[in-house]
Length: 488
Image (cartoon, rainbow, N blue to C red; front, side, top):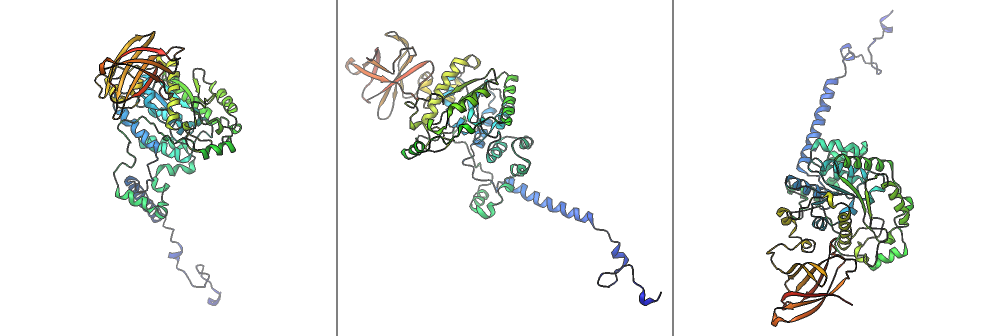
């Protein structure tokens, strides 16, 4: 074979020869993986540092879950205290129940550990976390979280996971709350909120300036998980919208999904294992918010019947609109309507009465515990729900535990205020006790007698007695309670 016809076995397409050493050289996999490892290490380090510094943490002012859990852990650190009544649910739980009034009337500690936008999964894992620190005697579930897919909103799940203590604990919760596609969002706020680089640089600047500072501090020294929407009731325009388009909550579309059934049964079993009573409550929305509440009631009732030892307080059924006026409902249109503080107190006193009739023997009585009294005595409602402590500033005791005209007076006192005084009377409930009492009082001025009509308020309604009150002029100094008569 002539040299002109010979072709090298190693030759590029362009016809240029390539040496055998180049042809036999292997791909540098080791270097490749080392580069990948160092690249990953750099990214991980950046994400770890930015997470640690909280550069990409969003606005926390509305992170109610974080604030509640922060308050709970602070509460649980005091070993002398125990959450006796635990309320679980979504935003209807925290906006529908007043934990201070509930605590004061049941002589216990009530705590609301709800997650706004949560589903049934959150109920179970919130109780699991609570049981690491204390053991409630009664767990109350608000029923609006039973309707839905069982998981709740993504942001609510992330907040619930992030709010709990312990990195391993958080990682263990992620698969139960989120689909695998969303796990990474729960792990890192930097990854979740990296869009802040282009969309919210002001938030990053704020976070950089406030590194190490609490971005979601408690609003007072003694928090029990309450969230009030205030007292701006339903406006004429929103009410007109309900009248024109009633029933934004389509009850015929409501049903209990398998996930909800699974996790509420797990919650019930956990309560039974720990000797905890479980009950359900439905806080009311305006009747016009429902398309057909009777249908939803049937759905809930059939489900609750699966738990033979659980009771249900349904405040929506036969909701009395003469008491639950528009002022009791928040100014919002939709199937998520919440209560105002007025509505919250109306709900809570009915719940107090329900607990008094069904669960009193299950709860501790902390009414004589000085620490418990100190915790609640600063609350404005305390004097209506508990005896006035001795020597409490600005309160003058007129009578205690006396029988007057066939009525047992637990307490009669004057609340001394800046511009006026208020005469308050607590009378044991009887079947025919009216909402107005005529009272004869003795005044210090020249031993004069005065006749006054004291009235009750639906927002102050303890289970065992009625509270009557009337405003007095500042110059009227009450000396004694003379007589009581039912006003004709």
